[in-house]
Structure formats: C-alpha cells, structure tokens
Amino acid sequence: MAAISESDILEKRIGILESLVFGLSDKDTEYPKFAQPETSPVFAKSTNVKCIDALNNVHSKINVSVAGRKNITETFNKLSDLQKYLDPEFTDELTITPSAKTEMILAEEDFIMQTASTMQKLKELEPIISSEHVKASSMSHEKMQELSQVHLNQQDQAAHLTDKAKALLGTYNSVVSFLYRNRNIFRINWYNMIKHFFFFSSCCV
Image (cartoon, rainbow, N blue to C red; front, side, top):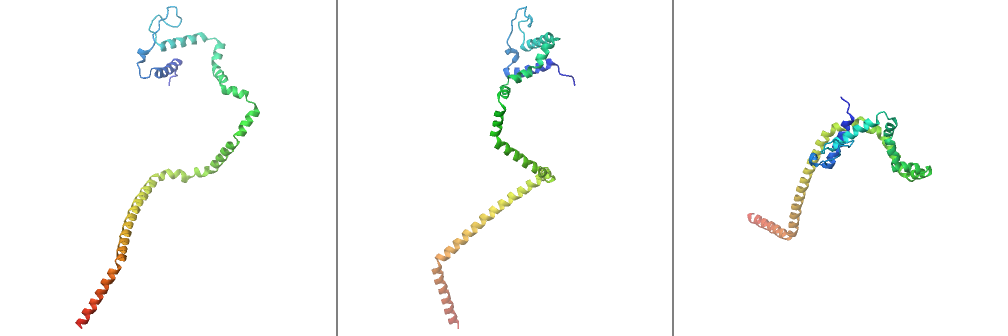
C-alpha cells in the first residue's frame, strides 16, 4: 500500500472542516473569493482562489522554508509538549503538594477499598466465569427459548383451568344456596311423597 502524503492528510482534514462548515450546501459556490495583489507571496494572480488551494500552497511554502533549519524542526516536534505544559491539569500537578495529594487519596479511601474488594471478588469468581459450563451456556440458548415457550403455554393452560374451576365452584355454591333456602319446601314435598307411597302401598295390599 502506498504511503499517504502530508498533502493527502491535510486535504482530508480540510474536507472534514468543509463538511462541518458548509453541511449540505454547495461548497464551491459558498467559498469566499480572494482578491490579492500580484505581489502576494501566497496567492496567485487569480481573483478566485479556493481556500484548500491557498492552504496547500501555504503548507508547501512552510515545508520549503523550514527545510534545513534544525531549530524550527525541533520546535515543531515539541509542540505536543508545549500543549501539555499549557494544560491546566499539568499546572495543578506541579502546584499540588504531596501532602495535598495524600489527603485527596485518603478522602477516597472508602471508594478505593470498595473497588479493591469488588475486584478481589471478581478474581475469585474468575474460575467460575471461565468454566466450560458458562462458556457452553450460549449453546443452550435455543433450548432455553423452547422451554420458556412451553412455560408460557403452561401458564395459559393453568389460567384457563383456574377460570373453569372458579365457574364450577360458583355453580356448586349457587345450587347449595338454592337447596338451603328451599329446604322446608323439599322436606314437605318429600314427606308428601312418602305419605302417598305408603297410602298406595296399603291400598294395593
């Protein structure tokens, strides 16, 4: 694979910036137009120079100007260090005393101890988590789904049987209540039936 040149990297970065600035607009029509004098060291005589061409031209001239200048090259290489030194957190690290750092750590002692205890439990459970049974659990996924479906079907059947049993109990209670309320009438009717039976029996004899 061919190495990516610096100009390709620069063009890619500018393309990202263009998408952020112009969005869905036509960037060719939205680009600002430059009208520079002929003596400009950067821009050509054209009054319609695009930003990406101008930046590419500047980048090329910078590379030419720093070529062979060791001090400038070393300065460019140390830009990351300069950014680190300008970071407010780096300043805090320099200004905070060891005793202050110790107090900050002691203030988080409970949290640190709790985290250490949790990590120790995880380490103790590592053989279980890494066991073949746990690894093979993914293979039982389909079987578990089938069992879950069977369980749901059984729940539906149990609910249907429960409703049916409630209906039968309701009918039974209604019959018992009816018989209890009309027990005197049934007793009289039963007595009359027995009396008629004995009467007809005596007549037949």
